[in-house]
Amino acid sequence: QRELPVVEVDVDWARFSTLNHRTRAEQLRAIHETKRSDLFTADPLGNEAQAVQYKILREQRGFEDLKNDLHERHQQESAVITAEGVLINGNRRVAALRSLYHDDHVMKAKYVRCLLLPEDATPNELVDLEAELQIAKDFKEEYSWVNEAMLIEELYDREGRSFAHVARKMHSEERGVKELYEKLQQLHQLVALSKGAKLHIDFTENESAFDELAKHIKNKPKPEQDSVRSSYFLGTLSGVHYRTLRHLRRADAADLVYKEMSGNKTLKPFLQAVAAVPSSSGAADDPLEDLLGDAGLTKVSGRSGDLMKVLGFLATKRQEESISLLTGDKVQVRDLQNTISTAIEAAATDAEEDAKDSTAINAPLARIEEAIAKIQRAADTLPKARAMPEWKEADFQAKTTEMRAMFKKLEPPK
Image (cartoon, rainbow, N blue to C red; front, side, top):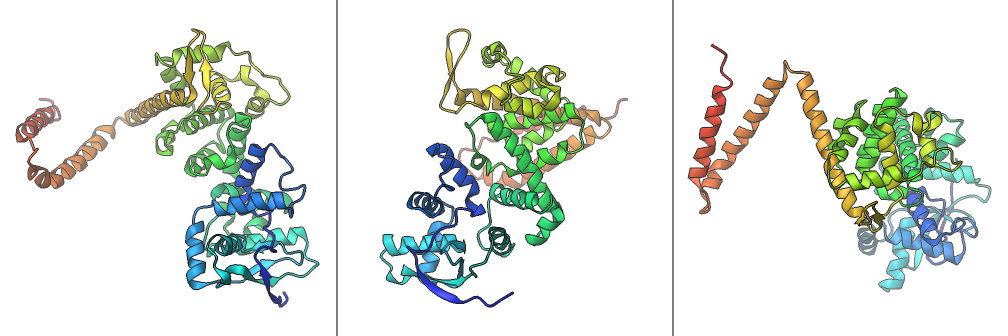
């Protein structure tokens, strides 16, 4: 609650904040690629950390649009900077100005206008300020869900594990903050399972899958949690759309998926190879053991344990890798994932049909309504189709005759 002085600083003098939660997932990727756990902590204001952070900011979506806007309209809002020159707000703007100055030779971009924070500002106050300034809903460029959830996690651990406190700081609803935190916990588990093959940033486009998973398993028995989680994780790794996966939110999801995989001739040699791998259950650093909790892999009932083992094996592999089969052949992980995706989609389709059949009294009516809607769409597009030279009226009439014959099966029994 004090007036802050306005200063203009050289864009090369200003230091990017390596504590910026907007780039947390990208930083974890850089740490993984460089194999430097202290990349952003050993000397956060040094040339190496700053160069990597600048590269991350430049590669973020919308960077070129921001540059063009700053070029045309110049700087409209002041950045916020500490007495040491670290940017708390305005990192992307300063990166864009620096790029304009050095890459595009725009001389007006040499300086950035900043509000100067007092020298006694504490690290916790700076994180709070980031939450206030950058997570607020009216901020132009939203965080990825992963980075926002990581900020929530940090604030939650610091604020006495109170979602209410975190929500107040972020001007958000408590329910939304809690849901982001919970789906991040699911993502943590999948990333841990991969043992470095996958990173948090790899799943920024899979928010809906983790959202639906976290909500479904929240109050479910442990066996159902394991079954649904393993199906969702394996489906997400294999590129199955979340709308398809939602049909597997049921206790026997792992049974359905593993049965479908077992019936696939292409996947049988792969499943045999996975079964032949010695179990690492009991290893101190085994993330699969952590995922299963005290139950352990061998105590998981049904096919959940088998599917968990497939998941634990496949999660550690990169798409470009090849897997050796017991036959001596090799298969590329990318091809395996495509085949597994097909099997999971088939299992989801069976689950969807099973759910429809379980409500048999409504199933005929529901399917008729679907058919009516499709026939209406066909009627709407028919005039345009008939106007095309390639149109084959005889084929169309044959189908309508077939449809009329099907209608007779719907008549009441005599």
